[in-house]
Image (cartoon, rainbow over all chains, first blue to last red; front, side, top):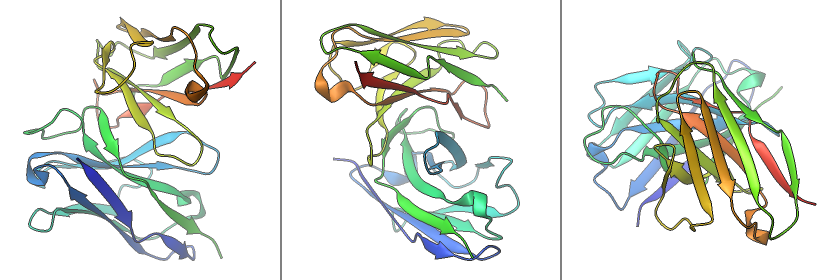
Length: 124
Length: 108
């Protein structure tokens, strides 16, 4: 069974930093593109960032480009999101999600499954 | 960036009735469209990909149709567990991968 478990969320002041982690199991992690998707309170879904299975290709939403960095450690089956220069508008639940296409994907298609999410709150 | 627009924002349906949800893309996404269901306090769950292929374990009462810019998710006979928010997402032109704003299906 595929499992994704996020951690690292919390309360941080504007301008601060956080690093999110997503521990994966139940599939060949290094073969699959992965993404981060967020959901602000009471709002819809917003794709944030994605990374290829090898880590050689990364993609970012304009809203986070230059502030967030996605990475992965395939030896630890773990996905990361380093978030710097955080803003109030970054407050959201952050989900990690596996590419639903399956093995060999260099970029996401649809997202399946999703982790349970980790809450990030940016407030003074 | 491709903008996805869902309608209606809220759909009031009685249990056992059919629900029809719409999703429109600002330009063609071919059949590269997925649908998700999200219940309060839960992560989204994949229902449909490729515009019409049900994901593993999804009941047959869920069906997807359309291509190009117009798509539909139909729930043939609503069950109590189907009341939720539904999102469409395109994966044809990227980045970014974009979602609709969601349709809430509520009990009438």
